[in-house]
Length: 193
Image 1 (cartoon, one colour):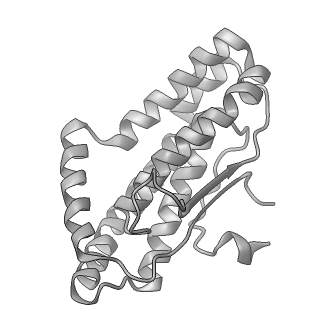
Image 2: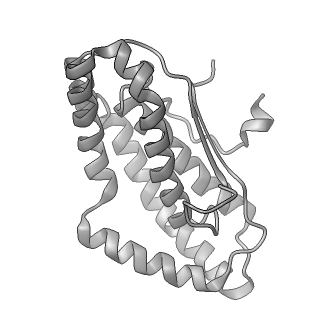
Image 3: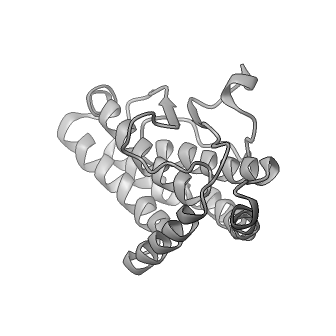
C-alpha cells in the first residue's frame, strides 16, 4: 500500500558550479536563522491546529489543503535545490519539483498538536539519515565542482531523504492521517506505478 504523498524531481543533466556557491551561501543564511526542519516540525502542526480550530477538520483539509500543499511544495523545492537534486531555484517557469498529496481524514486540534510528539521517531531516523546525507552531499558537491555532474546513486539517496521529509511534512500539516513510512524511497514515481 503506497503512502498518499508523491514527491518527484526532474534530474538536471548538468549541475553548474556557480550554483554550488549559491547553495553554500543559502545554507549559511538558513543556518543563521535556525534549522528549518526544527521550525517546520513545530510550526506546521501549530498552524494546522489554529486553522482546524477556526474551520473544523474536514473543512481545513478540503479548503486549506490545496494552499498548504502549494506552500509545502515550495518549501520542498527549496530543500530539493539545496540538496543538489535540481539546479533550478523555485519560482521560475518549468518547475522541476512535483508534490502531490491525497488529502484524507478529519483532524482535530488535539490530533494536529499531538503530531509534534508522534513525529519524533520519524524525525530521529530522518536526522540520522541527514547526517549520512550531509556526507553524500559533500561528495556530490565535489563531483559537481570537478565535472558538473552528480552521480545518480548519490542523487537518488538525497532524493530519498527529501521524499521522507515530504511525507513527514504532509503528516505534520494534518493533510494525511497515516503515519509516514520508515522507508527511503529512491525510485521515481513513474517506475512505482
